[in-house]
Image (cartoon, rainbow, N blue to C red):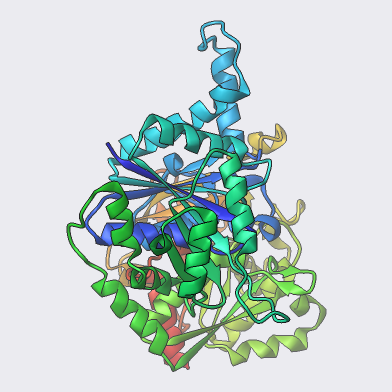
Length: 539
Ligand code: GLN
């Protein structure tokens, strides 16, 4: 029987619950166990695909094509495992399947109730993920904060599981311990209140991870222990660290892995954090900077810069820089600025390389096209991801092939449609069937021998994850190729162009897929590595 560890958040959101779950998973895996992690999001949306990235952050995509929460990306990066639809639960998904089952008379005519039928569906999904992945440990992150109305049914599912499987279920609360400036002392009261709220749901935490700007000292551990009803050694210090990748190492300083195993009466089989520690040492000591500019639009919210929309892109850049023992310096460049002032394009020269990441809708696209033109003509390494590839094709069609009205039909109905929608997608759009209907998940791609992409991968057949509706229009392939654009990656089933590149350039590559989703800390993605290598050369 697998063991289940539920992780809930106390006091407030945004304190790194996802990273905590990913780090606990990393530790248990390094101790020789098979681990999987499930994210529960309390929203009604069936998946994250329909949400605005500025509001929700990046939409992560799994191999099997689920548009899910960015935490799944954190789990994949820390666990070095590819996850699937089994790892993602939302209120929308749960209700959708209960209602479908009710409509199919699968409840045998009885009254279907919120309790226990909704928690039961949650439990059956958790058990299924354990069964299918054959995991020794299933970590389950309950989104939101305790005390919220929205996640009550998930806490109820957790409580029911603990009752049903005694000794097999643990609860961890990740809680915030403020150090208010005017007091100058770490305060535990909000955490005590949060534990009371969890108690109201019938749950007693076995561990508290104290998130704070400082380590949690012994007196405060004792205080939390007495007031929150748990062993003092089970209060774990989780201070801010320079990099998220340090978190597992920090937890280990408090012996978290062994303590969790102890609670379950288990012993570790090995201790294998060596490579991870080496990796963290490199990222902490790398000094020589590589400057990368990301030209995007999903990072301005009021007076704040939100980096969550591009989290996998950022992590993939970092992994590749650290591979070369360089220090990544990432800047946010607003595409709209380049529309208003062509002069401002000159600032792109300050960077070793430029990325245009994925995106939707017209806003900012003309600025991105200008930035891409600048990179092409000034020989600045350029890497286009999904929309960044499509706009590179538009730019080339306009400025090299002389197709002045070239564009994507997503952005301009009446244009020379170098990027166009596939017929089956057209039908979906007409019927307004937007949710979960893009070209999603892993597709094969054949690489052209000797191309930059093929050399980077060192293979001829690869698989990458997609999330888009529009494609390079094969009617324009010939003219693009004639003018020097190399189609270096083709999807064999549908004959779709997946990678474009230019030869007489230090690095100019665009990909229709999202390579950033598959980059892992110690296994940096081949294309990101090739891009950063070119950036180092031009640095
Ligand atoms: N908007 C484009 C499309 O749907 C690109 C999507 C993306 O960048 N993920 O095809």
